[in-house]
Length: 297
Image 1 (cartoon, rainbow, N blue to C red):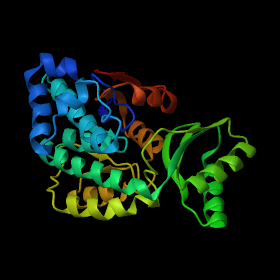
Image 2: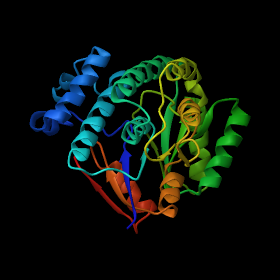
Image 3: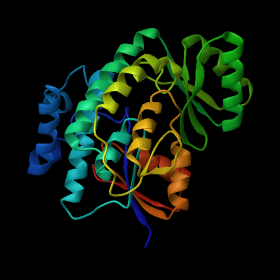
Image 4: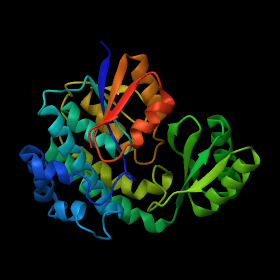
């Protein structure tokens, strides 16, 4: 029997109405979302369920996503289903830490509320993110480095999403120049992403400094099962290492492709997406088509 993975999506999967069925029909899931409201002073149900212009703003997106992910996770474990390992993409790593027992829900909600604010505040430094399709990762890395050196700007790999889909992040000037070179090198497309800033790049350093203080003040427990973290795509159980990797994650590449491959190599066969949408399920099918991937929402 292969290992069961609980995986948690990142920013970008949110939509108005996410989690409402769980909130309305499952008392324990409702209690989780209400706890997020208590911890943050925000009306999470209103932000998630009612038409508003805040849900797509980083400051609010992150806590709303995590609240819904945690509620869905609660609904799953209420059925007696538990993970053998956990992982999350970017923000989703906090959901993975909850599911592994490394962070309490209350602590995770408090930290992610701050994370969203800090990242939103770092946005005015300017920046952009673009998905590059159909180009070898090494070519993309080389072009990013060449562009950064020649233009004295920030441009780096933000996300290794799946084979053929890599996201780059950095200054607008750097991204534009890099995209020209990548198209010339044979990239099929370069698609600008609708995001609030240059996430997972050195432009997030101001947020990283503040987040480090918040994470260091938060208790991380020894997890009940390994957590595969974004920065090195490896399983972790040491609270000290988990903290260090959480801080580093803000400016480092999200190694999702490598993470999934490592989990499969370590015996994972069943991937359950705990969160809104089906983005991660789609990525699993491209990275590890031999595995089973499904959702709950």
